[in-house]
Amino acid sequence: MSASLKGQCLCGDIKFRLDGPIIRSAACHCKQCQRWAGNYWPSASVSQDHLVLVTGSESLAWYESSDKAERGFCIICGSSLFWRLLDNKENWVAVALGAFNTPNELNEGKHIHTDSAGDYYNQINTYSED
Image: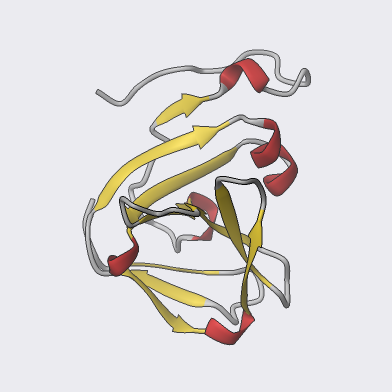
């Protein structure tokens, strides 16, 4: 999937678009993502150079959630939007799939950290999009 994907936070103050391809997508079940999203967190990873904030840059805040990563969110509505490594050597950012406008033909990709999945799950669909 390539450019022209657009998205926004819940209140619409932060709007973004992708000007490049998606590198990979995944649904993370780690405890931090569960607390961040209220469930697992599906996202699409893109080159940070291809993520363009159209509006709302003043409403985007970053929270250092561990010694390795930070999470970007809207300070107005609280939408969980972005995740990236602090060292960011690979220059990519994960974007919440739920923030993209639809239709978009995106999918969750593979499920990761499923060993940490909440005990409220009946069954986890673990697959890879190979």
